[in-house]
Image 1 (cartoon, rainbow, N blue to C red):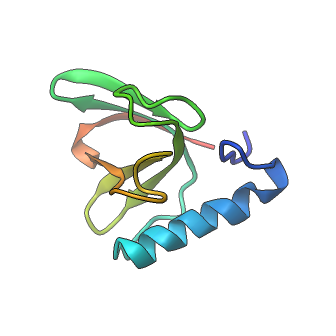
Image 2: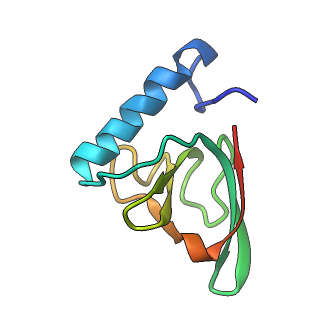
Length: 105
């Protein structure tokens, strides 16, 4: 499956994805984002299994998932939604230890 970014034409997805990655690096001072293109992440949050899938609503009502990154420095997945991590607020952080399943594009 090819990389997708919600609301973005397939030809532009890579450019927009890289722009989001650069913004996180610059604005949030995250310096070690991996090159993985993550499509979905299943993880434990306070004993409940949650799933974040690019293009779908985040389960706790925090917008549509637009990208999922992995920060090598902190060993955490960063879920960016329409309300968290891209334009305002910090991304949703999930420790690598809490991850149950990760699927790449």
